[in-house]
Length: 209
Figure 1 (cartoon, rainbow, N blue to C red):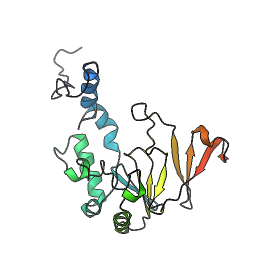
Figure 2: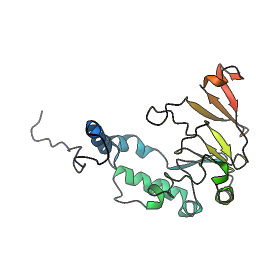
Figure 3: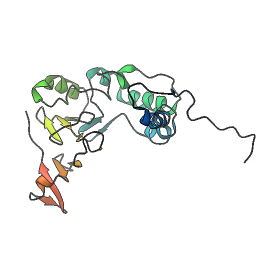
Figure 4: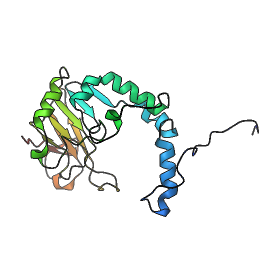
């Protein structure tokens, strides 16, 4: 090995310890922080290639959700600035995009367990500002009853908590066909005796208004 080659210290700038994390998990926490921070190995290789907001057909996808201020900011601008920040090209990024409860990745305005706590009128107004879009699909907030819809199928919540840390729930997939119809493919054995498509149990999307 060439002794003149300098290798970047992957843990440079990483805190020696994190409060509220047990001692036995500190090394893992430091490694996770180093890998996922802006310009980190995993962040640069994988996350920087993702879009923060994407419109596919008549659906808009965002991790936590969107407010009108995010739309006015510009979806292309959102994706560009977050991507540059993750790559380490941009030192800072607007808080409304990635930090705080009203940011795109932390928002829960349309993900509450109780439909009555979700602001359907606000959602309607947001969707009206994106041409051709009729529904918002989001994750971030675990849904105890699996993938579900509120606000007349205008808000689709798809985080079912599959990881062991966050619930260890059964995997589910939202299917949107060419006619923009929704179905949920599930591995939950409660639905095994129901209708199946190619051997995959299916449950229909609940219509919650």
